[in-house]
Image (tube, rainbow, N blue to C red; front, side, top):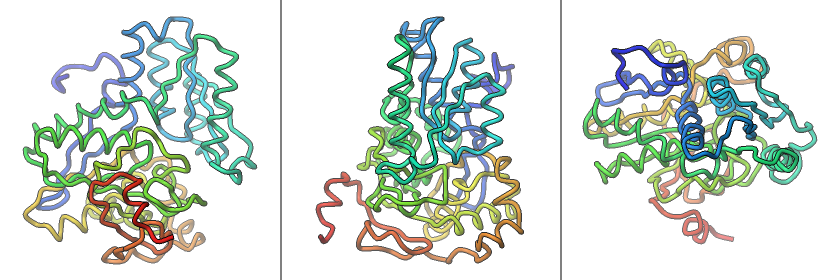
Length: 346
């Protein structure tokens, strides 16, 4: 794909990030809608392999931007789309999804207090819907290997544009973006470090399941696409720290991104300043328009108690199951989840 020619459709134009220099050795990979990469790749591969016929309905569980990417792609493919979501889905996103023709079901609020939370309830409802729709197609963003595979295009762009990359930093949710991008980067630069950014009470790297104010990263269920052996370090940030870092990213660099980007920027900026001879790339998954009335509103931040700036350094942990603190880190060491958890005191 060349940027010197016109795009065949909007979903093609949304795919790749802009690489923006943020410091002497730090670049941001700025996406308009990062989830477009796996959504487009998964659906088009299914179409090519005959798994998405003209009368098929696409059914997926999501409360975030993967649903938006699917909805945009479903318009171009002329396929019906049903999304199973939950009460925390952003109302602006909900309106945009329905305007694109998607049917959006939200599981009851009470499901959030059950084991597995909303994600487990959404999966249960998805299976009920599919049982009544023979021939429906489920993209399975959490377990479909085409999700991480699709990010080879991002790795190619980064390597072609910047050459050797010494460290990749990014938020982790489904596991696709960081697992896929880091894996393909290491096929050329094996020593490239990978740093995961998560939030407290996400189970991905050892925390007990619980309420997570910071959305768009972290999970209540373990996604099959997350390869823990990719990661050298893990950082957990609170919602307040991520929000303040998001505003700092905007004020310093003019980048209007969402709070998961702010969380990643907090970690990447810290690591790059402490490793001035290493080139760092940080993933910024989406833009800030959905957060103008929250993260970008000083009155809202004050009312929510999120006016304090983040610490200058993370608190290093010996125990990855410790789910307190504002900004904490753990040396994961490219180990499996089981290997790390086996060393945690009972």
